[in-house]
Image 1 (cartoon, rainbow, N blue to C red):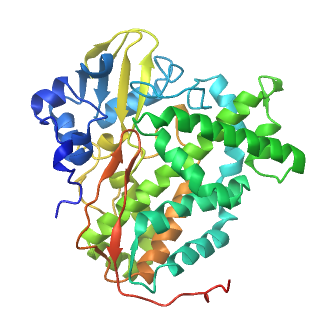
Image 2 (cartoon, rainbow, N blue to C red):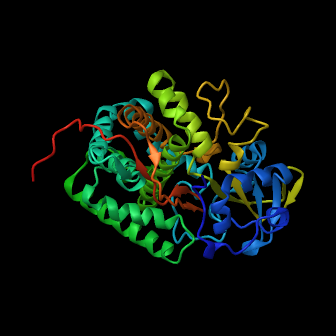
Image 3 (cartoon, helix red, strand yellow):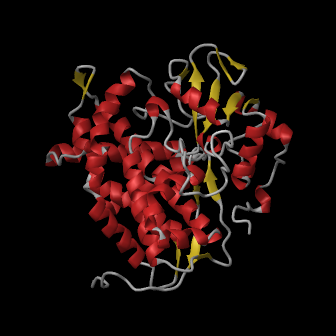
Length: 413
């Protein structure tokens, strides 16, 4: 069953060895269609290579090469942007700055996503998960991406972390998803999202503090001075971009894996103690945060390849997490894996600040889904496509399952 087939009209190039070695295009629909096999070919033939596309850039797919560049911020900078063929129209903090200034912003947001803080949201998160499942469990079918995967991280983040209006979520989710794609609307959506954040900040200043990360950002001191409005918007912008589409992508791809391998949910149902490790395997195999770019500050070298100052390199977390030199039998889902140093949340100083929240959302979601949904299958007419530039997420995941009971009564209108 090919769940990633692209429409024939979109097939325009042939992915062969020459394409992989010299003409690699991360925006290609053919790559989205044949994603992991193509990255595996690149990793085996040329774990570091140069492409002539988009003005020329380097690609790293080997685990040690990706990790090494990510940790070497002195040579490979984020300050010139984190995309190839950049789409950003303003600074998104702190991901587009380097230490030591970057550490100033991380100190502002990190306390609000510590494990002890995130743990306080567990009960409400479980209630939210079950409320979403209640919305479709009696039907025996749903578009999992539309009815669960996209709403869950957004609702959780809006309600617990930002205290933002839930009625704005669908709009903000759409903007956040669009900004990650190589489409003309991306720049406009960045501005719309920034404008929404500015309004949220203005309202918060009127209504007073709530003890959340927005308060922390607004009260922050950066290098001994008050944070600027532009910096505050950029910081909250990153939290939204990092917290919505990425977790939704992992959830959608995990559900596709459950459909293709029904033994996985069956095993987790019988052995729930494996679920935390299973989440790590799902993150390794199916992470939606797939790549990020860096720019060389000075001449350097990666995997024996000379990289000149000013040249960009695209780091493929998704390829590194499937590297057989780091992971034994890397294509196999193994929740009892003894060693799992995956880099699904990135690495180095820019590693994802919200990883604890993402892990909790994923763990609770898997716990409730495998217990409440049985005989899960991909819908017979399913034609699954992916957004695959810097985040990878299925557009839709239509599934069927044995209808089950709601946990809460239907709310009266």
